[in-house]
Length: 284
Length: 292
Image 1 (spheres, one colour):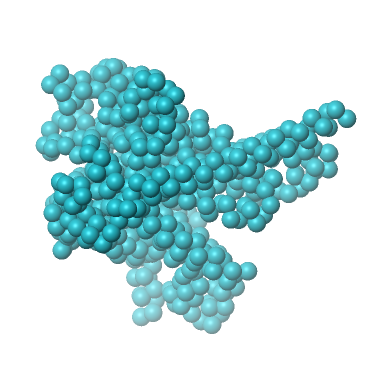
Image 2: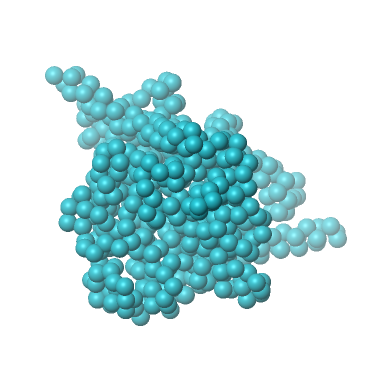
């Protein structure tokens, strides 16, 4: 009897420990966000969003960095989206189970695990130097596009995989060609899933700092970019720069900019989860 | 006509897929060419054995060991924190928690991995380090302990999510058999479920290690920029990734030796993560075959 009681006690103890661990990360995140809000929320106003960078913390704003982030995000989407979706369609719908398919699969899984800073080194050598783009919006966008490519491919494949086989069969039975089936049936049917993956990939891209520092994006850019060949900064680099400054005013600025960056990231994740839930219901 | 159109489309799609191969080839080529240039000026033996890394000083030393020890130290701290916590979460969610709780908590936990790492860096430097300093006197304001712990928080969801998936994939019959024998949830978890899902759990841990080794901004902000061969978690160190950032922020001439050092450091990092990713991919493939 004693043994049973002991085992039950251990069982209960682990349950409490499990709850503790589960909440630990979330509580730490909450503490941290609370801290940031206290530090930075008072700093956020229209001027902070619209001001150019400055040596004086109370005059500095995030306008150029925010614009840089938007430029890079749009361009990254334009570059990564068609290639990623096309590659996923090929792998999921066209490719036969041969050696090439295996190589592609292993390769994509490996690319997904390459540290982001390595993509920075690739971008620095290929886009900035060999293709002579300089540390421009275009070079940054190409670098980030390559970085999120594996994520887009993997999530698009998952979405295509979830479309029931009956839809394909029905389409072929109506005499549709392969591409007609893909274009008119599979893509609309998997749209929600593809969208979820893309938003998650972009939310990752918007927070990336290291690869853009490596390609030479600057912390201090006096003007917002007006073309794809302009120099640029992005929100995370601006935050990094402010964190490393000694004056206290910049810490406040960093906290305020972090609030805006987190807002962007969380809203994107929220939208992605919303689409995923809505889409998953469709096939149930 | 239709056939030609179909063929053109198929080729176009194939081309897109092949771009991913080009990316890998590009990474390997760029890193190795610059690294070969580097090793024509610095002997590889010095690189691997010299205990000092001072390429930006007048007295130059090119030993990777201090950067490697910084990388391993911060990663070790992160893993030592994240593995027990992440595993406990996965076991709790899969074997104890009610379904509805699991469904709400999982996306929330994944939010931990969605927070940009520069934000975690701020957290480590401004919150965790002052907190640790309050009971570790003499701790430097840049140190690997704080950076490692915060990195651990970031990688918790990598371990908890993937391990939970692995535990979830274990056939229910095993669970029912264990309960039928009168085991508690704890006994079932550790004597049946964890061994049955071990390959999936190992994969999650390897991926987390690879993530920790390649993590940049947290360590660049909170662990310092002083390469030193030490395992003392309270002093500033420098990781491979932080060094690459440090050089990128400065005015380093292209084609200078300093410029090449970031590629030599980069290829070292790439080899490590590549090995880890390959191992985890192999295990994952084997695991899939087991249950299909």
